[in-house]
Amino acid sequence: MEENVAELVDVACHTCRIVLPLLDSPDGREAWWKFLDEHAYHQVELLWEHSASQERIDIDYIEVGSDIRSDPSFAEYAGEWSGRSLALRPRPIARAVAEIVRRAFDAMDAHEWQAAPADAAAAERIMPYLDFAPPPGELVDDAVVLARLAAVEAALEQLRRATTEPLGDHFGTFLSDVLRALPTAADLPPDELCAESGPLASPRLWDTERALRLIQHLVTSRISLR
Image (cartoon, rainbow, N blue to C red):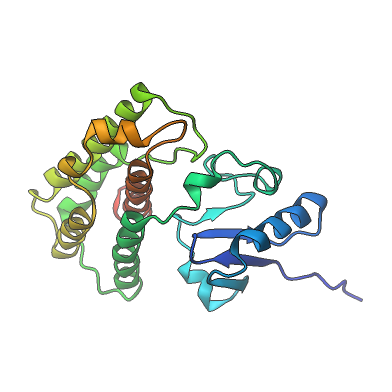
């Protein structure tokens, strides 16, 4: 007789963009109580493996216990997670970009996306500038903030340059759309970002980094030559 295997269940807060796998372990139970304390009155949903709502979970969602270095372990989440105050703040830039990325994935899955020969080469040039996954609990000083801002500005410049290339209509439109959703250099003044930071990064800066990571996911998984 086959043993019954419990189906894995996650609980997601769509308000704060965080997912907690439900585990029957000491750390798992402690994390569940912390989740209830923080998110009981938010938009919360139970997700099974084949739940249709799993499609709503993109890589901007923080997943407790994942192997991504910016996500907390169960013990960290249940305890004094150093990144909590930043990670659970609204991320309007990332969410605007997430919607554009979702539409692009939908078009690709429906075979509506028409690629051009130049798309993959442009994606290869963009990719090295989009590797953003800083932990929310990473302590920063002015030098770190300015270095991270310089990396963001370099990524934005690469995205702008790519729009001048002979891309396919869909990729070109995608880049134009995300650039409209992303901040400009004028929206990220260094003195203000430094003032907003400490000991954690500026929420505006981290939000922008998360948005760029969403773009990286699409470019890496669907457009580049790799």
